[in-house]
Amino acid sequence: MPARPASTLPEAMVVSVPAEPRRRTTGRNLPVAIASAIILYAWILGSLLLWHWGFIAFLIACALAGGFELTRAFSRRRMHAAFTPIAIGSPLTLAIGYIVALRWGMTAGFGTVLAALTLMVIACLVVRLRGPVEGFMRDASASLFIIGYLPMLLSTLMLLLVQPEGHLRLILYFLLVPGSDTAAYAVGSLAGRRRMVPHISPSKTWEGTLGAVAITGLVGAIIAPLMIGASWWAGIIIGVLLSIAATVGDLIESMLKRQAGIKDMGRVIPGHGGAMDRLDSLLIAAPLAWLSMLLLVG
Image 1 (cartoon, rainbow, N blue to C red):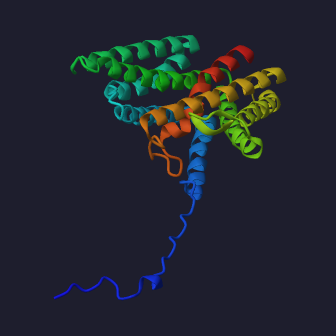
Image 2 (image 1 turned 30 degrees about the vertical axis):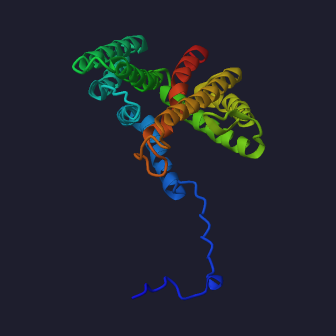
C-alpha cells in the first residue's frame, strides 16, 4: 500500500506563521526587588539606631552567604576553597573583634581581627593538606581570596561602628555608596557615550562614572557636616573616595562573574540575586569609609 502523503494541501497554499516576537525582559521582578531592598535597608537602619548587635549579625550573614557563593563560583573553575574554616572563622572574627573593640578600644579590636584572620588563613592551608598535591596552589589562592575579600573587608565596617557616633557614620556610608550606584546608572543612561571597560561591563560609561563621582562628592559635602560633624571639604573627599571605590568594587565583581561564567552569584535575595551581587560596591568602599572618617573626622 502506498504511503499516505504528509499533507494533502498544495505547497503553494501552505502559509508559514511567523513566530511571536520574544518579549525583552530585565530578568528582575521589580516589585519583589523593591520589597527586598526595603526590608534589607530597614534592618540595617533599625539595627544601627536601636541594636548594634543586629548590625553585627547582618555582617556575619553577609560573610557566610557571600563566602558560600564565592566558594561555589570558584569551584566552577576547579578552585576549591576550604569553606569550613571560613564559615567558622568569619563569625568569630566579627563577633569577638566587636566585643574587644567595645571593651578595650578600636586599636585592640583591630589587632584581634588581624589575629583572627591570620588563624583563618593557617586553618585553610592546614585543611587543604589532606588533599592531593595537584591543585594545592589554586585551592589555597581561592581560600585566601575569600578571606581577604569578605571577612577582612567587612570587619572594617565593624571597626567603623565603634568610632564616635559610628552608627551615624555607617548610615552615611550606606547613603553614599548605593547613591553613587544610582547616580552612575542615571547619568550613564542619559548621557553615557564612551564605554569605560567594555570587556568587563559593557553598560558602564565614563560619563556615568564621572557624574556619579561629582554627585556623590556634592552630596557628601551637604550631608556629612549634618550627620557626623565633618567639614564640607571632608564630606567631598569622603563622597569622592566612596564613589570611586564603589565603581571599582562593581567591576571586580563583574570580572569574577565573567570568569566563573555566571550571571548572578546566587538567589538568596529575591529580585536581586546573591549576597555578593549586593555587596560588590560596598565591600571595596568599606575600608575607605573607615579610614577616611577616622582621619578626616576624628
